[in-house]
Structure formats: C-alpha cells, structure tokens
Length: 393
Image (cartoon, rainbow, N blue to C red; front, side):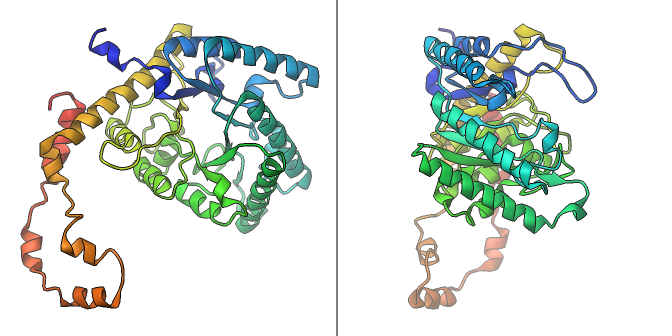
C-alpha cells in the first residue's frame, strides 16, 4: 500500500452519501441535466466499491411519488437485497416536502390545513420506509417552510405549526415503538426568500420547546451556515456541547453564494480542517460517533466517471484532514501554545459560585497592564496549523 492509499475510505470510516447527491443529474435553475439519472441500486453498488459505509435517501429518491403499494413494495424489496449484497446500510432517511407544487406555501407551516395534514401523512409513510430499511435517524429539512410575503402569516404561527408537527410525529414514533430519532436541518434562505428557524442555534432553542426534546437533535450542514456568513465549526460545537449533534451534512460553500453543495473541503479548507479536528476529537474533546454524511454534488461538467471521482474525493479529503489534525494536536509546539491553564487555582475558583469563591474573586489583585502586554502567540499557532494542513510541519 502506498502512502496515498492509506487515505482511501473503508466502511469503518462511516461515510455516507444520499441517493440525491451522487444521483444528481447536473440540472440547475438555468439548464437541463448534463448526466443520465442513475438507478438507486447502481448507486449503492458504486458507493460500496468506492469504500462508503452507507446510503441515505428521501422517500421519493427511491419510490416515485404516487407509486402504488405493490410498486412500492417491489422497489423496496429489490433495494434491500442490493444493500445486503453490497454490505451497505441506510443510517438516515428523510422525506421530500418541497418538490410537489402543493408545498409552494410550505408543508408543516402552510396556511392550508389540508396541506399540513398531507405533509404529516407523507412523513409518517417515509418514517415507515426508513424503519423498514434500518434507519435510526430521520432528518427534517424544511425547504419550503418560509415566506416571500411576510404578511401571509405571523411567524409565531409558523413556529407553533412546526412544533405541533414535531410533537405529532414524535408521538407517532413512540406509538409504533420505533427506535428512531429526529434531526432538524436549518437553512437561512433558498428556495424560499426567508426560511423559518434559519440557523442551527435557532433549531437548538426550538427543540427545547418540544414535548419530547430528548428525541430531537440537529443535522447541521456546512453550506447552510456559511450561506449566513457564520462559522460552521462553532455551530457544530454548540450542538455537540448540548448533546444534540444527531447527524451532519458535509460539503463546501463559498460565503455569500447560493447553496452550492460542493465537494467537501474544496473551497473552505481551513474551516474543513477545524471541523474534522472537532468531529474526531483530536484536540481532546469527545469524538462524534455518528455517520459522516456528504450532502454534496459533482460539478455539472462531470460525466458518470466524474461522479465517482467526486465521491472518492469527499472521503479522501476527510481522511487526509483527519490525519493532519491528529499530527497538529500531537505537535509539542502546538500543545505548549494551547495550554489553557485549566488546572490553575484561578480557573478552579471561577468554575462555580459559592460565597467563599465570590469573596476570593473580589480579593484577586491582577496586574492587568502585565496581562495586556503578554503576547498569546496565536499567529504562531495559526501558522503551525497552516503548515500541518499543507504537510510542511
């Protein structure tokens, strides 16, 4: 095995792709598809060949909208056999509540109660499908849950409707005794002018208002936080600290652009490095143990071969960054620079309140001028990180 080969993915890496990601045909708002549609069973076989662990899906990625019960069962049976034949799993499922024109005013938040009822019905069916395929996570991305004309509804009403839907579906899962958790995915805009609950922070607070908040976490996506100009690493860290990172969508994005869903690490390498470092726990924090899901698309310029180059690229980049992060955090120069004095007497003093601690804090006499003059050497730290990323350290 060459040195480069050690970055090739294996199922132990827990890398997953969606049927809609590698299956993307290259269509965009201004142009027709540039690639043929790929059969879901072929996607499974090719991903297994590339070293992926699993595949995720929307209900209609596999079963066409409006298919009969018999058609649905035949499709699912064939797909399950393909999964078994290729040693692949389905860790996550979701439902498409954005493509059909009926959802033009939203799904769970639509003003029409019949639309809201249909959205619940479609989601229950998709949850059943996910459970049948072995999924333990169900993701909700409310692509149409927003507005262009804000006078159409009070935003508080929309949030109440979202809460009612989540409570309803949590009860459905409990009533069926399904072993499934929900993960909510935020996005600030597109396809709606403004989408409700636009960031991971918004979602985390919303979850705290649910009847079964223990069942519900988040599914942050790189591109969605970057579209808002925010740090994805900070959003993921907040979710991890709250014990709510149930799933994650990895891709790349240029800040200020439309949702690009680019190959992981292709545009934001520094953030990608810091993200992998966080997820892998090389800096000393707890490691994320869930799937590493790539919600990205090959360039529109690519043919079928290019799609699988794209998939391998996502996985190899993650593994390379994982290797670089481990080397960075093992570097004695780095360790000396990031010492946070966690065991110092002052750190212990301010860790929790007591009257005695409050008195001792008041009694502290710090030389603030000396503290202000002290250099923190973060330039050196950041340069070391860049050199490790570039393989020069």
